[in-house]
Amino acid sequence: MRHKKKAPARGIRVAEQIQKDLAELIPRELRDPRLGFVTLTDIELTPDYAYATVYFSVLTGSAEDSEKALNEASGYLRNLIFKKMHIHTVPTLRFKHDVSVERGAEMSQLIDRVLKDSGEGTA
Image (cartoon, rainbow, N blue to C red; front, side):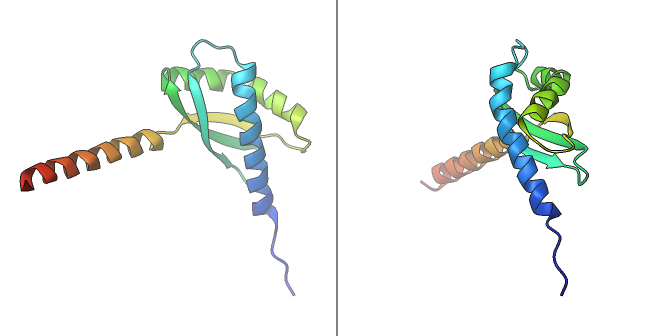
């Protein structure tokens, strides 16, 4: 009888823990004026845990400035995560702006506009 590997489930748990820790550390530890109000949306972890791509959205401030500030602070954040988590390899963090939230809002506005226009034409 063959057993299934448990590595993917562990990878998901590690990514979720990193996301949780970063969500606490970023507003508490980073005092960069370029950094807006950041929300972490997803983390993609490589199978060997060497790299983690952290996707975020920004509610206030510039997405480009926030991305630059987060990538400059990634070594510091990695060090803080290393102190909190007890795993052999803490991944190198790479931050990328997630545009899916903004695209979703734009699509919702377009749908609302089309529904409003079609309602006016039939009345």
